[in-house]
Image 1 (tube, rainbow, N blue to C red):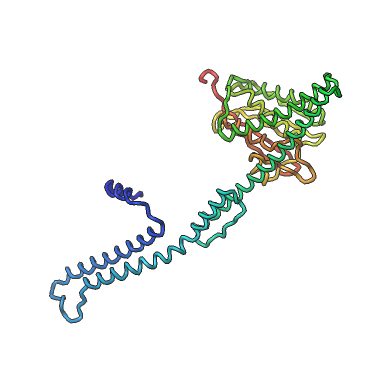
Image 2 (cartoon, helix red, strand yellow; image 1 turned 30 degrees about the vertical axis):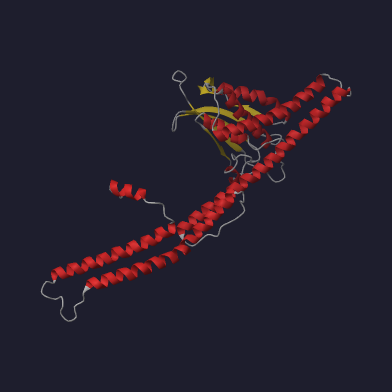
Length: 371
């Protein structure tokens, strides 16, 4: 049941100036005391109404009116003073939380607040500590990404600079092999720029999609065949399960980008002799959607990493196995952002290290005529 105040009272309360929490606590104590004394006064008056036989003035009779007035004065003063004193102790954890949030705003994420004994304040402090830890982890990954991207950019830029200067000085011959090398280095720089641009679109939820009626099964098969030479070079089997035609409205370029990322990650996760399979099927539960499943027999993912694998700047590293070179740690973040921009999502499942992983892309089935 919700307590509703009359409109006039509500407007009057809204016109009152904002008061500090300390003053509010003090006034609440005083208000409780006043209500208690008023109740005592009403009880005394009720007692007098029932006792109308001249009890007032008899020996032993107590006159309640002076007592109520004195008790109200003394009690209100004591309640005001004590409430002001005790409110300082009650508000001390809140002041610490406020100071901690100011330090977080200034970029100091390492401070950990002590958890008070009060359950309500303890939950608030734990949330602030959890926020600080999350911000610290994001800042750590962002700094690592900036360093790695700077390294990734420095290498092709240095090579390009040396090759162009060599061509200008006549040291290198401008033949097809030289231009192919220049094209590869430019492609690396373009890929980094595209990744950062896509990440910005994901963060701002500003993806511009160009939906068209697309056969999802054919799109998955074409993408897999496009990457098959890389799988053959790595001696990893790539199997695409034939399926019926599933046509829906989506941006084929963006979904291809998602599949390239998932297949590339699956290839990196597998050792020679491994296997990656791609399947497409529809599912009516809870709403009609199409699922693209990319399953590998690679190194697998731990439960801890499953919870953070889609976080931006995150690169999962395994003992004895270096992270893939050139990875920016934002591919899965971008892939999930593209799927969600279509109204779908991406989920991952794994039975643990050494037992492979399965990524499932879910996209809604939309009628091409209605859209």
